[in-house]
View (cartoon, rainbow, N blue to C red):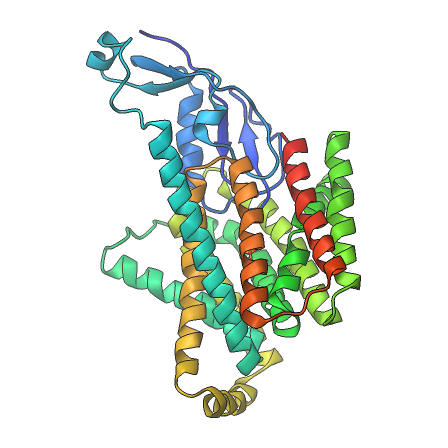
Length: 401
Ligand code: 3PG
């Protein structure tokens, strides 16, 4: 059967933005979230936008477009879900194809991704806070996180565990603004967590959708449906309530989380632009992002903190914690890279909406686990503020659909 598939393509996103296009259109319809890595997928999507002159097996009709935060699951996008099939499959149409993964298998796979993503993120946040409590030099620990990820990827490329990307000057130039925003967002979040409870940082970070809408509206001139604006009320109100009732409020910690939100919104916008025509895959895109961010951050880390402070603090941390402090430092660095890596992998499998909800659930996991592990004092009204903010992100997700 020869047919033309009407399949909206999409590029991935990370955090809370999304980029997607409809067939025959180069206009980006949603400016939120951009996912640094999904270039390869974008190319795949673009390929799927052309008329397909191969036998197709029509497999599903799922419908729907738009969504709030990031990219959409391929199957969800597909108005007329189709995939290339060999002739035998076409001839055998009518019977269920053995190549189509069952819904149950798909759910299991996504569940594994989510569980891994959340678990890695929870572990990162716990070790990150343990390190910062003993060694309050967030600029250095942020640098080490990026250095560790860069080293892991260089080793992967050298040993051919992963194929090294082919990049040119143009790629690095377009990656630069993304890396600047990534660096600012990363170090700002780490500075925040060095000053306040992990849970508080993540409550404020759950307000990232509000930043995305405000930047898109007032800087990019985009407009959104009224429900989207209304959903910002609980997000902003919940974050504000949590902030004013936070027992261990610290302005630097609060502003760090706010700056991180703003920086990650710009990272997503720059990523979207940088991904156009890019051929570097998700995993390698993130690796390159880590490396460039490392280059950008290192001189600033030296200027803000510096070797003398680091050396003095190192002796203090070692004397207080013992040699296991080094393992904490290694764990926070390794898990930082791993959770980011898995989050990018999960983006290949899930929709923007699912990703957004997953990211919010991730923050709930981090907030709850860190409160338990660090015995963070929480007032009921403070918890109420967090719950309202998180509820707002779900409403936002629904409104963006
Ligand atoms: C960082 O250090 O970059 C932040 O902890 C990132 O947090 P997020 O991935 O949950 O936004």
